[in-house]
Image (cartoon, rainbow, N blue to C red):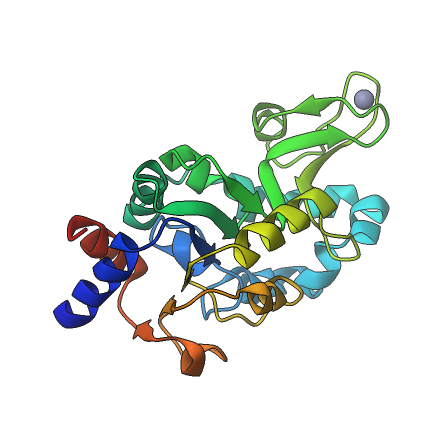
Length: 245
Ligand SMILES: [Zn+2]
């Protein structure tokens, strides 16, 4: 892979507004479960006898917050993952003035934990919560302390994670910011995503720049449009490329 890494480093050296677009595969190397793979969340959720799209929907959250939080706690709050090589390399690229933004489908906050500043979290974040009744905000501490029970506000309302649930719209400001960054990008790096989820994946159509670099374990619909395709671990690829800049 070393020739390809050299080429990737060369593209990075020539870039001032690269954008990284990433998905679950970026965080699996941190031990965060992804959704669709064999031991992912979508398979594990079968014990609830309902599809995850149903449990993770706004109407289900309102109808049965107890089951919602039982599930949510198990899969989104039980681990305290740390950023991996991929998150760290991307934060370095931003620091070097090469990367202008990270657009992510992940909700784990690991890009910010690694030091990235301009991060568009398309599906929201599991690091923040809002009371559905009075709007009060809190961090992970209150839901974590609730240990799978419904986290409640002093006003009696329920805290809802700032995660975009099924039936909910993506946040408009986040979406607009991501579109702007992608449409102004001079290099697109796509990683850890099968590009199966819309509308998030449709954002790539706004890219008008030159090369696309794709890093994913399996094939994606965008492989043929990418000048460089890596099947290796994303943390390895990004950190090796950054070393060679
Ligand atoms: Zn409240």
